Amino acid sequence: MPPGSPGALDATLLDAHAAGDGPRLASLYGEAADRFRAAGDIDAACFYWTQALVFSLEAGLDEARHYADQLRRLGRI
Image 1 (cartoon, one colour):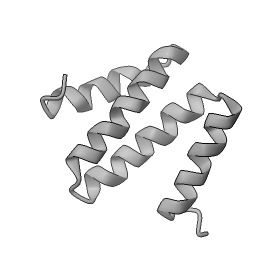
Image 2 (cartoon, helix red, strand yellow):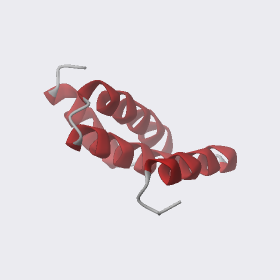
Image 3 (spheres, helix red, strand yellow):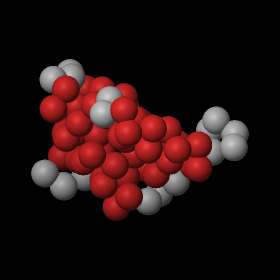
């Protein structure tokens, strides 16, 4: 699978879940959200930004503010 392919991202997400790597999960979910937003699928993007927000909050990451802002701009929180 090419590194930028959706399947590769799915596999990387599954690996991060198996490892319990919250910071990595936050980043990967954020990346997925950006991809869906670019493709015009706002509902999917918001789902992934929500996951990114949860994992970044759990890990105490500053990126949580960015993910919350994305959701706020789209009227999701």
